[in-house]
Amino acid sequence: MSSVETSRAEDLLRELAPQVLGSLVRRYGQFDACEDAVQEALLAGAQRWPVEGIPEHPRSWLVTVGSRRLVDDFRSDSARRRREENVASLDVGDRNPASDRDDALTLLFLCCHPSLSAPSQLALTLRAVGGLTTAEIAHAFLVPEATMAQRISRAKQTIKGSNAGFDLPPEPERAGRLRVVLHVLYLVFNEGYTTSSGPTLGRPDLTTEAIRLTRMLRRLMPGEGEVAGLLALMLLTDARRAARTDADGSIVPLAEQRRDAWNEDQIEEGVALVSRTLGSTSVGPYQLQAAIAAVHDEARSAEETDWPQILALYEVLERVAPGPVVTLNRAVALAMVNGPRAGLALLGTLDGDERMAHTHRLEAVRGHLLELAGDEAAARESYRRAAKMTASLPEQRYLSLRAARLR
Image 1 (cartoon, rainbow, N blue to C red):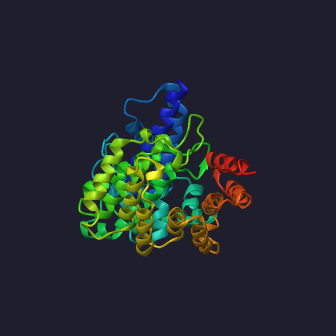
Image 2 (image 1 turned 90 degrees about the horizontal axis):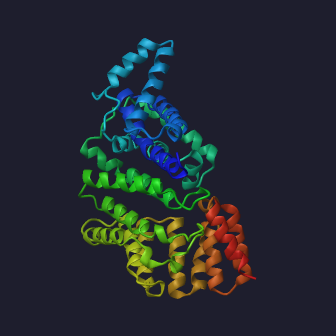
């Protein structure tokens, strides 16, 4: 198999992982055991598909391999009869491992079960549905990896002990879980758009899956403005993907991107969603972020960007959903409207925020604003500090290059 086909196989395995996990959990009901079985199936696929070729029905292949692993475990366990009875009581009907039913959305809601705390809901869903590693999830939450590993382990045990059935929750209960579900999809998309570590800037498999699940969620809950807002935000952001790097994979900042390389279809769909939704329902953070993205995408050049409107939207967003990342982004908008020193003063309010201690973004933005202010020596040091704090190789190269150009 060629390198292109090998890459396709790897992408397909990542895409199918949550669907396979959903199928196994629906059939067997034992979340922790099913996740182990999925990992075994994915490993088998990674070893065999590059040699034997991708099977005609890859999802069914993985479900079958995972099911066999589970059956073997059940048979070898000393409490086989009790386990088999438990499996039978949890089976909800579709016993065909080759079923084409997509259980990813049901799995998403299961991971957001009300018996879990909100942080545990987020962590477990990112692991099971998003396919993120524990390190990637820890980065998204701005906590140490060991802390996140314990949180995920406890969440799995809680789900196991809850005896929750594998079905979409009833409609009244869906609304209560929606905030966490949206946050999870948002984090999955963000990790795919700018990975926390590794040699590439993004993981299109994650952004594609996040968009796919959000479309499914919108079909399930068409009257929810924040679902439409999140979908619009993803589309408007992902529309710029092709222009974010140059031929050798180096990062191209937004102001320097070729806007004719942006995806016009995604922009058109995203803007239409924002236009239909904003103001028609109660305004939430995803609608506001989508509106900001729309202002960026509709500007024909960086110079024509309506920064006063973006600043006004960030001010509303900070009232609706305050947080250090919102303040960070507002500082950039403030700098573009009132000058870099104003932005730097706002950034200074984040220096004591522990949530920013695990991310390079504060120093990266500080370097950018210091450079705009003409303080090249201080900008160089901020860029260098930021480069040391990120595990993303493209971001390391970009920040180091920015520092090197300031002499």
